Length: 114
Figure 1 (cartoon, rainbow, N blue to C red):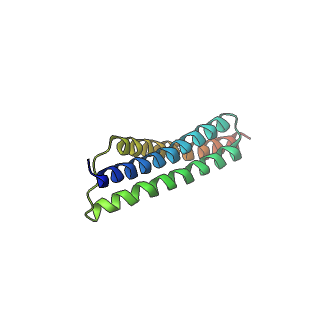
Figure 2: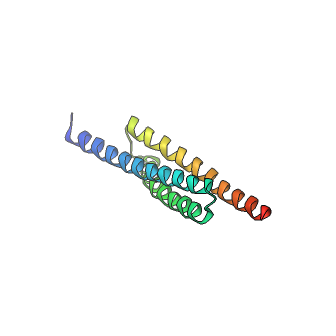
Figure 3: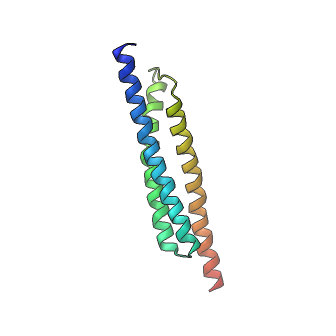
């Protein structure tokens, strides 16, 4: 096994873990936001969902750098960990999108009922 391969593997693993950390943070913040939404605490829910969105933006930026490298011709090896990181990121993005809509909907329903 060459030193270059080890360095590339370590680099991709580190990148994957950073994506996972930020995507995981996003999901944790979203769950807290949804819990606040259950309690009808709209401001807290909205702030937490916004914070979750910021974490996803960071994770997405890390992913995009890697995809741009491959698009420019640099071969990126297959990595199960990187695939898992991408899956986690996409799930978090979808959940946050739904969470953002839920906060708006709950606010509208609450305003109509008051």
